[in-house]
Length: 114
Length: 115
Image (cartoon, rainbow over all chains, first blue to last red):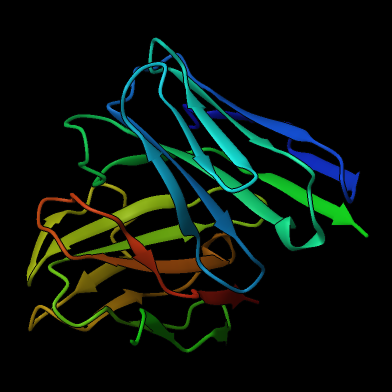
């Protein structure tokens, strides 16, 4: 049962374009994480957001946690081919920082064409 | 430093065979997780160890799945009498802190194909 919905599922854009990926749920999470996964590898943590309304920036990536802690977005500015990969959001239920029961989205497969 | 390693990277099993998948976590990491990731989907939780204790196995899909971590380091996920629906990537992750807290570091996964 997927409690986290990610959209879009697939995205193919040209180098230099901007994009936004969304992660939505009816559940309230104590924290939410964004991962990037490349083929043949495990997911790698990009960021953890904890506070409702929180915005975090990681170079060209901007992450936002919704005020009600039910949704999140990832915005990439001036996408580059190296950004290609599967972007996954994962919400933690229970105590903040406790990742034992992460609820995962299905992922957004991003392809950035040169 | 060494990350989480898993072996084998690829495994093909005939339906009905037993398989054993190995995870070597980062040295000193207390928590260890196993996940199942089907093609085109996000990981799904299988089980959690704190040192050698299996504290949560609520995600194991059937009694054909068994995991152990006898000395609190290396872990093995065993699947008995494999079925086609077991085909997936099995990911292992470890974390420094107990209780499921802290960042999880993932291995590359073992891709299991049951024919």
